[in-house]
Image (tube, rainbow, N blue to C red; front, side, top):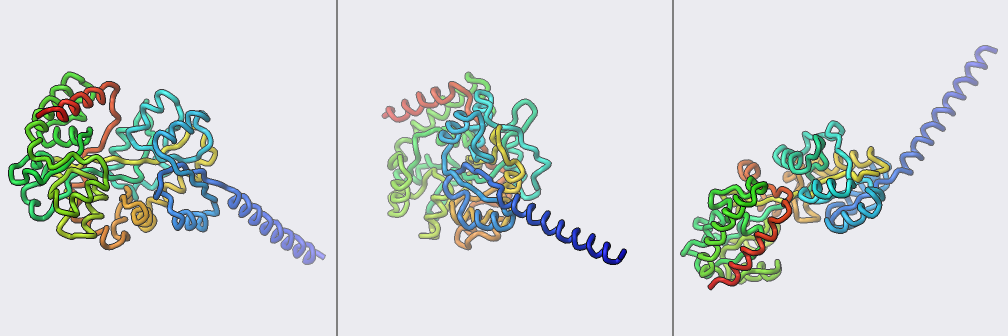
Length: 361
């Protein structure tokens, strides 16, 4: 009789374990991660693999900075579990609208993330002793040069060298102001808190850009226009973004993107947690998942932009990987000047400088 009772108890335990496992699987399968992000940052292949490995469904909403802010403002930080705003669009928005919550770095595998980029977002998204963003996808602006002038044009102000007169193009936008400032030996970002000092730097840049006008074939205003100028050889040196340079390099190896000696200018799109996220566990799982080098490479292959994942270039498509490595060694990566948030009033000052450069003879 005792043997029969033990058999019944064992059978009950087995049934109970099976039911518990089934219920657990059902609960996991019912989980959802609501992600608001940019196009290319959550490829179908990556989403499918995450869902298969975790049992968590991913609902992707494509957006941009302004739309993310608008949607999260309207709900007080609800409606999404994970967002991907740019690093310079977090602190000011958080101060004003309180739509994000601090990130618990202990829940992330930070060994997967490039240290210089992690430090950059730790600084630029810090508020009241907490961090509100970690790096995801990044890109830079620097120089695209033809090999004929590669020895001449190694920094922004080299675009003004007489050897490339008439063969140069750049935009009359704030990245050009910032790049020229660094090449002139200034640190415009360090002057953000001192409008008088910042104006002094802008004055030096304005003089340099006016003196440089004779070198400029045209001020480009659109990416397609610039790529056409470089493809046809009308322009041999330009200030532009890295992905455009790598695209041209795939077509013509004589054209390449160069990280300037004074530092490429970098932007970072981050991971940020909406204040009323309903599935933080899934959000942290997604961040750790897409920072795996093999997964991060799939995002780069889709978007054309590299991620903050350490070693992901090993898995990226060969042509893009080789172009990236040609542009960025470890020193160039560590020398990137990451854009901080822009204080109120500075953009108006910059606009006046750009207007005067445009109007100068």
